[in-house]
Length: 118
Image (cartoon, rainbow, N blue to C red; front, side, top):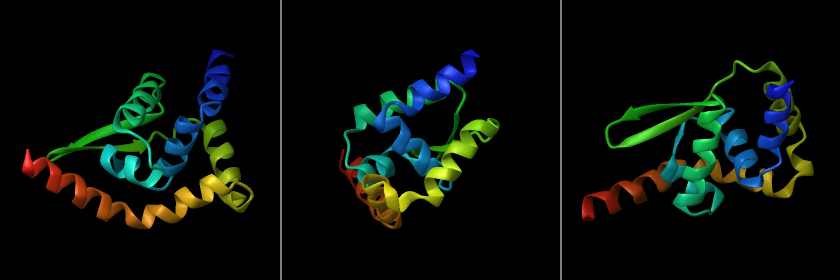
């Protein structure tokens, strides 16, 4: 029962919902997520921390970046995310996020160039 409650708590937060829906079909780093969602890095990191705590995302280090993917071990969560993806036109913000995923390489390039400048 706690697992079910945790899923609903997770989905009740807009940032976490948007991130986890992005990660359904994409492997993304924080720079890409902040660009796609137009949110701050601390906000994305806080949401990802919660998702990691619930074992819903996994992370992998590649060069200077940490990439996140959805842990698809929870069939209930996957069912909900599939429903949202199939009806994304009903949710303007989620549809905008989906369209901005195409810019993920641009957001990564921007982040990489700012790291080099430091």
